[in-house]
Image 1 (cartoon, helix red, strand yellow):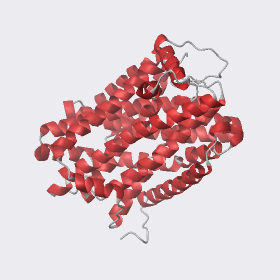
Image 2 (cartoon, rainbow, N blue to C red):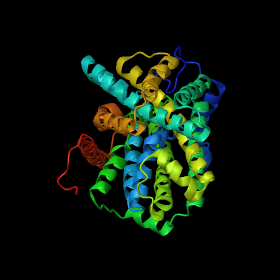
Image 3 (spheres, rainbow, N blue to C red):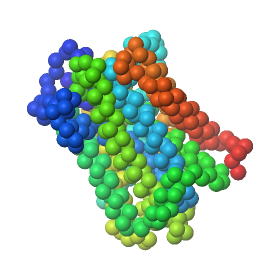
Length: 447
């Protein structure tokens, strides 16, 4: 494609596109698995990719800040919230991936096809704001990591982050597989960092196991942190993107192919999102073990977490923390750019060169850094923007996936539709509370 970013191969099924040898091998392996010629783990391996890309949204710098704040202030008590948020994310991301498999189209494309032109353009504009708000948080996270790790001024760190993400996105010129592998590698590196942090922080695993499944809510601050953890977990751009990643990755030739593809897709979502969930738990219990149990319950942002980790666990733990943040910021920025392309191509039917999108989405971050705006306040505002936009992808996703005339054999089962509606109600309610509280409102049940 002329914009240098194929990401989801967003073309009609009858349009031929150049596919490299790497991509051909992956597609052939997928078809061998569908036909039963590949068994066990060898059958699943070629399907691993799309969900790992989408899962990066659940390990972005915004998650770092929220999980650290929860763990430092309330110890292990809030772990169940992270588990609940991850279960809801699994359900919705699986539905998004299924939509791409069933229709050969992504969620924004279906909105353009079924809604009026005015509605599609409005949804595009709102969704672009969400993509830019997401990119803002991711850019700030990666830039902050470079600044604290190497002493690079924030402005130059942001430019380096933009250059790194652009170079990674260029892997798409070689087909979808190299980019999938690269993002999956970043995910594994973040996981390795938190495995090391687990050994260094010595968490109480009995407490981790107990509070991961037993709900607890204490004072008003804990309620609002629960709102923040759940309300900021399901990202609008990840829902849009996942359907684009699966829509033409492996084109099914029959209803039976679709059913088998969806089974492999569900397994991949469970693995990738489950892995992201474990990392979020690790972020929280590391903060609980390192900060809460040592009397540092006021650690509420990334900078203070780094400064506090050094005397408590040593410089190695602090450096590993920043390295994981750097991997998170860069990889999530790549995914955010990919999502922005899906949103634009789907809603309005055109795209721009990836380098133009990279520069445009960098500008707000560069302006904020140059003006010396408080990074924490900026992250809060970006989360509010995401909260306002979130209803769009969730409601439209449920609407399309419950329609048999659109989904065919992959239409939602009744329990999936009911579960997704309940998830949507919970998420939307918590996001409304987050917006209300951020704007200074007081809930009567919050002390």
